[in-house]
Image 1: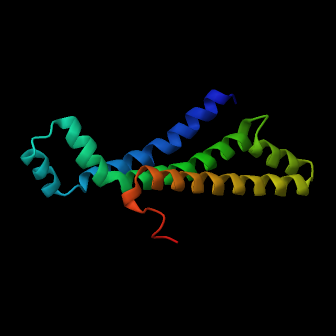
Image 2: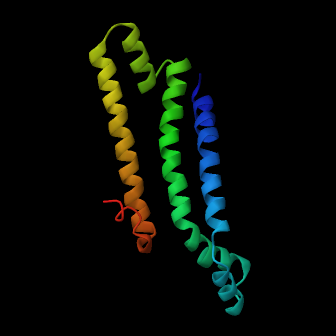
Length: 139
């Protein structure tokens, strides 16, 4: 399959967890915050940016973090099934050729890339939304 098909598969697997978490975060915004927005006469954009987005940011970050993991799974599944390049293809091809060393190297490389992507995302999430202390609670 081509790169466009891989991108579509990744997008399809990521969009729903991010959407559901974002929706859950918006629904969980306390009514008192929305009352404050009305008291301070904020317009809809200001309410969305300053109240709703801030209150739902941990839900959104969680959805994006889940999406990163699902993106890796979808990418490897696409490459394992029908591709002629990539880490998934390397793992599958090495398995068929009894090259266990290359297969394990591909699996290890995939794990390192997944860990690196997650750590980079958490780092930038903490820098972007400094007040949330998102990952500091987990360590």
